[in-house]
Amino acid sequence: MHYIKGVARRLRRPLLVAAGLLAAASLHAQSPALLDTIARNNPTLRAALAGRRAAEAANRAETRLPDPEAEVAYLAGSPSGVPNRTNVSLTQELDWGVLTGRRKGLVEAADRTAAARQRGVYREVMADALEQLVLLVHGNRMVAEMEARLALAQQVEGLCLKLYDKGDLTEP
Image (cartoon, rainbow, N blue to C red; front, side, top):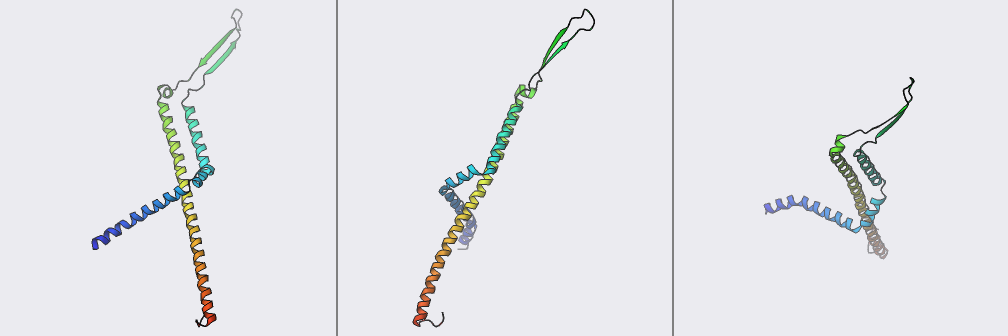
């Protein structure tokens, strides 16, 4: 008998956690439209998505070679007999990370980091929203319970007053 009580005591907390998770899952299943609306209209989530897109765009810019530089010079000959000439030069900076593809791997890792950061913000906001939704449902149920208790108390008060008026009760 003592062994059974110990097992029941050890299983109480995991069972309560499982029941809480099932209640949260059923609440999520009951109100997906509300959570979807929160996800679409939350400014924090919009800012996180915009930050992710900006980070990805900046990362993509790092995978490109810089623009080539062109230079044109018109040289006039100063001593007689030296003809005028035009020099044209074109230079391109080479980045070995871009040429070998190593920079692409770094950019992909940075993109994954930005995506993970945005998913973390999403999970945090949605967890807060779900918590507030649970509190709202709990509060509404408490109000309904209190209204039911008030109705019962008023009913008991009315019955007691009737009995008092009849003389069946001595104190109101």
